[in-house]
Image 1 (cartoon, rainbow, N blue to C red):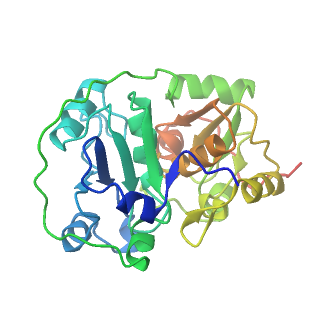
Image 2 (tube, rainbow, N blue to C red):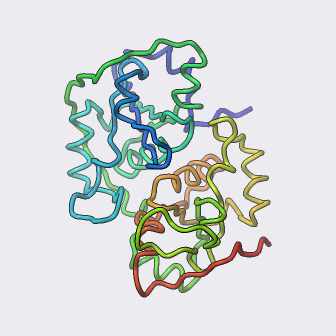
Length: 285
């Protein structure tokens, strides 16, 4: 079986703890309804040497949207202060298993880091393997992160309008089926229910199993059942750009190097007054 180059097992990570050039990043983030608090959980216990990446703070300060990708300079300043260099092997994880870590995996790669992995199974898998845990707030030594921004990584609203109007790219929405269909209200005030015309629903949880990314064979089957061709150039989207990256990780795992992420996601699209919105679960072909 070919090993996924974007994942690392808890045992393999444990073997390189403390090694120069290896940075470990706790990328935990939770929805309000989950009633969990990422920074407090980090301080209670984390992978030894891990630093905490606050997904609500490493953003564009001028944007009113949640999780908007910051400028290369802001990103470099924030992660450099965490002691992370662009030349490091960077391992990200979260407290659920596979939920928010792929967003930070995607961000590091969007700004030029070449070797970024997701801890397979996240912190729950680390704990299940009875590996050492560190407590406290951490005190990273600053490093230099030199950004090399990939202008194609993110799709912004003007281009997203063109993509939807032309149907030029496959649009994959990672939200739950009831939100995609407009059968359930959006959790953020003022955001309309439904989805972009022509989008396909690919709930991110269907790509995972027990907090881990499914095997390549299982991923292909899941995409096929959703009427999605994982080899086509695609744009991923979700509520605010976090779980869209789970779909991006799955596509890259299958060799799709033409995957992009709509950074504003449904919060931006559904908040605009003039963007077209459809409801219903859509057909699978």
